[in-house]
Amino acid sequence: MSPTTRVVIADDHPMYRYGLAAMLGSSGHVDVVAEAANGDDLLAAVDRTAPDVVVTDLAMPGLDGTTATRALLARHPELGVLVLTMHEDDQALFGALRAGARGYLLKDADATEIVRAVLTVAAGDAVYGGAVARRIVDFFTGAHRDYAAQVFPQLTAREREVLDLVALGLGNHQIAGRLVLAEKTVRNHVSAILDKLHVSDRAAAVARARDAGIGGPPSPPG
Image 1 (tube, one colour):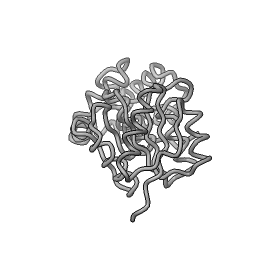
Image 2 (cartoon, helix red, strand yellow; image 1 turned 180 degrees about the horizontal axis):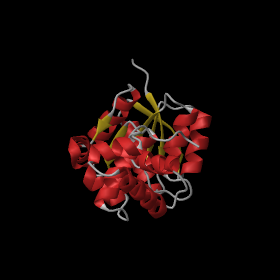
Image 3 (tube, helix red, strand yellow; image 1 turned 60 degrees about the vertical axis):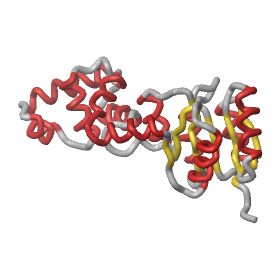
Image 4 (tube, helix red, strand yellow; image 1 turned 120 degrees about the horizontal axis):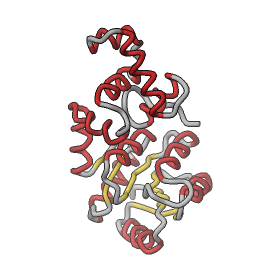
């Protein structure tokens, strides 16, 4: 008989946690070894029980699910994290994926889909619900411009273009050539971006962009 997958679940709603634990346990493939009501308790539970997978909500009191995921994977890089949430907006999705979650399902998923997702993440693979997968495809096929507008609505369309290229590591001269602008104009756009994002320098703007899922890899966990 194959070993069961050890899981810690985190959700601030006790009845949902109870139902989820019962459903996973009844599958015969999953052993729920701990439960947590917030991100801080989740970190402690994972340190204590060394599970294969964490199933976590995003909105929780104190340490939220995205921040907890980043902290967990800094401590336990091999841990599989599956987000199970009501939040289907792009900012929640890409924030969780940038933090290192390997799966993302909405809470309307049925029991079979959730168990399958847990086992898939435990095996080292990634899994996303249908609606979530479509958002990811949109991101990589260019629709991420709409996402950038949601994340940084205070920026103009041109400033978002400049920020995207800054986050990719391009210098002002390269950006000017790419966008067919004067280099002085690019410098002015970069200054406006720093002011609107309330950051002091270019590196901080890059970190903000990458943490939001724009440009290159996310900034390392603090």
